[in-house]
Image (cartoon, rainbow, N blue to C red; front, side, top):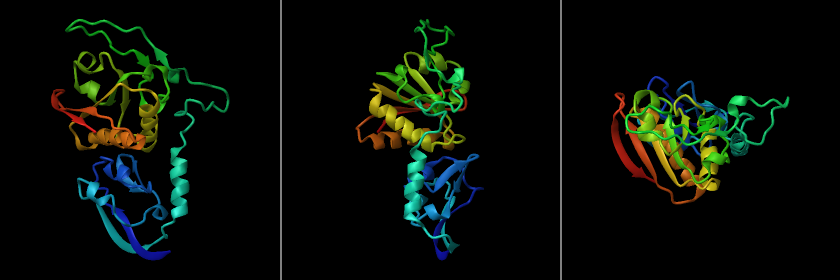
Length: 245
């Protein structure tokens, strides 16, 4: 224990956007129950690289007595975080040989729809990012749609406007554990031969975390990749479209 600088997070101000999580190279911050939390004093170097990424000014650096920063512990922590859990891994068997039928990858015949038709445009299963293998067959050479899971409820014409001709993955950047998502998306972008990426999220601040996940995953691949970023209003209307890197 020593007196040193360490990050302090005001949970009352935190909106759960997750920008500090991706900004922390030591993995000292996680989103837990929709709020950013310092998971261990030993992982925080106290430099405050996360401060400038918080839109709510919820993060400060204070000087107090706390556990010393431990670089070796950080290395082990980051290595551990890279390992997928059994349900996330595409190669890790269940300890009792059981595989949940709901997680098995499936593809369907492509559906045709006319304007105004309500036919489902879903062509594969599963759709939750936590359940999808980064080497799932349906991802090969895919036009990928990564959407916040609230978007389809807001957009009445989501299937015809967004989902058609795309392979969809859904996630919540506020409530999900997003750190494994960065690793998984990085592998998808590196190995699946994704043709295009479209990211769709709601206009609420925390939902923009989905955009930052994709940006971080692309950065991890070392490739130059563009993606379309689409913001949806609470009324289900498209607020903004832009091309990002």
